[in-house]
Each structure stands twice: as structure tokens, then as C-alpha cells.
Length: 287
Image (tube, rainbow, N blue to C red; front, side, top):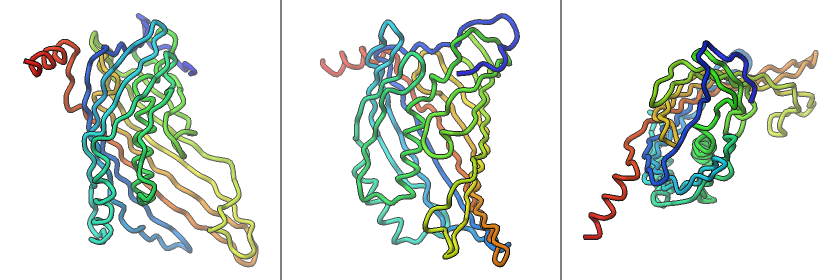
């Protein structure tokens, strides 16, 4: 975690204090689109259904060192169908999502903000595009809300943490800025970008002559708001553009192909039950 600017005075630590017994319900939407540009012709890729999940997390314990242990439940999972998606594909994907609601698990977040475990086991036969989106959502949730600087900061502070998640996002240079600070919470702005070094192209993209290299470009921006007593954000938005550039500098047949993908992720808090409300509800149900 590198602090780039400490911001204006007064400086104070930026810390979350999730309440043991508190239950937070969130809705997460993830949608993506893609296109291929080859020989100067740009062609949209077949539409991929987005995914919407409703998750509930209960904080089980907070250790003296600040480690948080929580239990989560996947209450609902639905497809966000894009126009042009074949009906047969929709039926198959719906069938794959049916067993998911009701899945539970536990997660742990260390005092340093790093996830110590957050796993949602998915069916092995789930379609790859939907599996990728679900894995991206859960991997991002694994560390969200704890990516805070170790030193005291003020408004306008900027720092660079590792972004949770897998794939191109996890390696991107990430910058967070403290845009708002109140007694009960704070708001952040997020920017990320990355340009990979040239690497050998995957086998399925190589020509017979070979020699192709692949470069990944990632650009993204978003924002989030936190309440100090929550585990996850009350709002989170992220828009990311990824470009894969395939290049072969063969004099006789130079090759240039680009693959474009956009990802939109939206998180909203649906409800929050503080510990006292949970205890009262439990007592009422036992009567």
C-alpha cells in the first residue's frame, strides 16, 4: 500500500469497524460486451448475459488484531439478458443458476485488508462466460472495503493498493482518492490502468508462421461509499475497458487484430440489520 498524497489537514486514520452480528444485504450486477477488430473490420461478439446476485453477509467476529470473520449467503442469482441472445442459451444458463441460491460460505479479511478466504463453489459444467463474471464479482468482493491506507490521511489523499480480483484487473495500477469524509462514513474515487509487456500469443491465436505477440491494455474508473459499521460498501461502481492487441510484424503478411471488452459492475446495499435488531428479531421468532 503506497500513499501518494496525504491530503489536506486534519489527518486521521481511515478505518472500518464492522459490527459483530450485523447483517448487510447487497445486490451486485455485472455486465460485459465485446468486439473484435481484424483487418480494419470491427465486429461485435455474440451477446453474453450479465449476472445479478443478492448476497447477505453477517459479521461473526472481529479479533483484537482487526481480522474480520464473516458468513455469507447467496440469496439470489439471475441473468441479465441482452437482446440477440439465443433462447436456447438462455434456458441452459437459467438451469445452471437454479442451484446457486442458498449457497453459504465463510470469509476472513485480515487487519491489513487482504482477503484470507472468500469462496463460492460453482458447478463444474457452468458456461465459461457466466462463470468468469461470477468469479470476478466474488473475487472483487473478497477484499472490497478494506483497501485503506495504514497512515492517517485527509481529504484529497491518494494511495495505490492492489485491486482485489483475478485476471487483468488484479495487475492494474490502482489509485484511490478520498473525496468525502463524514462522521459515519466516507467516499472514494477509483481509477486503474495497465499496459502489459508483450507476451507470446495463446496457441489458438497463432498463425502457422507464428511470431505473434499479445499486449493487454486496461483502463477503468469508478467510485464507492462506505459506512464505518459495514463490511462491504453501500455503493460501488466500476467501468473497465480492456483491449487485447495481437501483433505479428511479418513483412509479407503483417497481422493486427484487437479484441475489445467492457465490464460494468454495480453494487447497491439493499438493507442493513444492526446487531440489536438481529437479536430482537431472533427473540421474537422464538416466542
